[in-house]
Length: 321
Image 1 (spheres, rainbow, N blue to C red):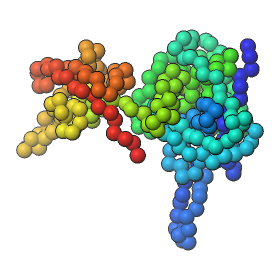
Image 2: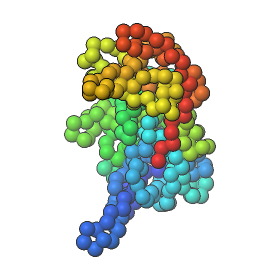
Image 3: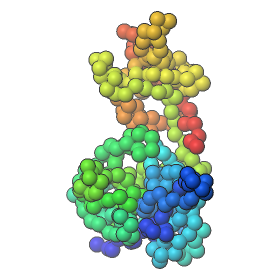
């Protein structure tokens, strides 16, 4: 077993917080810079691109990156993907100081495989913890949008506040995931941590580096919480809104509305897409993640007591601000 490499970026608490926010003093009206959190990350390439979680840098007005030799550089946001909680920063550091982590593969991981997590828990930079893969194909929600992230890696390697954005490595030191979340009633490690798999991260980072954004297809609908649909005794996704200028609206999907007397008229209930059964919002997201902008999908809906199949041309998700 080779020694896993230390991540090339791990911000510290104190004067090197990874982000801060601007706050106006109530009495003097002076604008103050307030340290706002700490996180981890790693160098992706020799061009100075640094990968971390989006929730680590969300709302930041100032970003600083501290490399392994404790040198600190100002960083700029190249792009981010709120849905998958991934962000790419860029630092103008000398190339000889940038040491990208070797990229591994997450598709062939096995439960019980040994892993290493490196990060900045509680401000203790370059901390290494070890464990095993406890589970695969888990699902968590994005901290920014609530959209589900599929195929997440579960590990018992200690992951604590400040580890977010740090690398999860295999026993050869290859990147297999980004440490993103923990399940913990107390806020500290409980032995249940989650990492976004590198196979998902790789495609996102490539798009962010090239275009500054991720182009993801959408149906263009707002849908009801899963519990609301279950109470109706049906299985599927209830369309609450389908704007006329969106893909679903153009295709004729019907939203939920009220009549002249204030009575609720249920909209279409999506039961399948391209023949794949839809029982909840996660199923819908999972299928859309496998599609591309411009694809035509066949959406089967329950309209009243009738089933209809409607072709919908998927469009790009509107730009995020």
